[in-house]
Length: 331
Image (cartoon, rainbow, N blue to C red; front, side, top):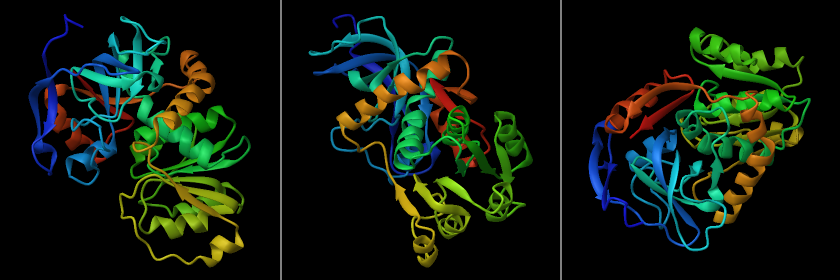
């Protein structure tokens, strides 16, 4: 590790606030501890939780870097004691607890996956946070099965486009909501049914598309008044999985339909989960999803790539919610 630079460029959050509080700075290059690898970052994905962290609403868990960034792709340049799978020079993408907006980033060796054959580093950086999130919430907590119907809110977000593609590849009918004709067209191009929530009532549309039955699993990142509407759109024995609350985390809900339809309301966050839980997710993804990526049946959608120094512009674009797919930084 002697040839590693002492200092590296990274994005710091000057103070809680808007995109303008992100600034390029220099910090000490980290060194890997036990079971950790150091990755020279070639690309880092941007995710909605990064913007919440910037605003002071989503602090890093204990021991995580203050530097934002939850997923990276790059080259392994050093390995700590106990690392057995990876060696210097390996190309990986990894889920990280923070620190992705930098030239170098630490990852637990069990949270790294090989860059799928045929994908660029930019595409690989768009995988970990979204694929870990979708798999754990839709297929594990939501227990989605072939032949069922999945309703995805935010259908053109990184999470949304991932959920659509995974659902379709596992034999599911997918309905997704979006707020413009352009976004609905992108959803349909992926193979899902699109509902323009600005012009249509998604509850009515879901009922029409399912012949009155409703959606078996609903992936919700909106919250607020969507919570009660999701209950109406859900099928008997449906599972409603909440992963974010862009419209607020509280709502007045009539629980009678929940009881009558035997609904399950659940949700989760990824970042605070244990090393072991994330490692198990990584193993499952490599077995069940990585082959789909390597054969081109699933491909991450990239909306725009920004240089690291323009992280504030990347956050501004995300908060406009005009993007289709992922936004990525390159050092």
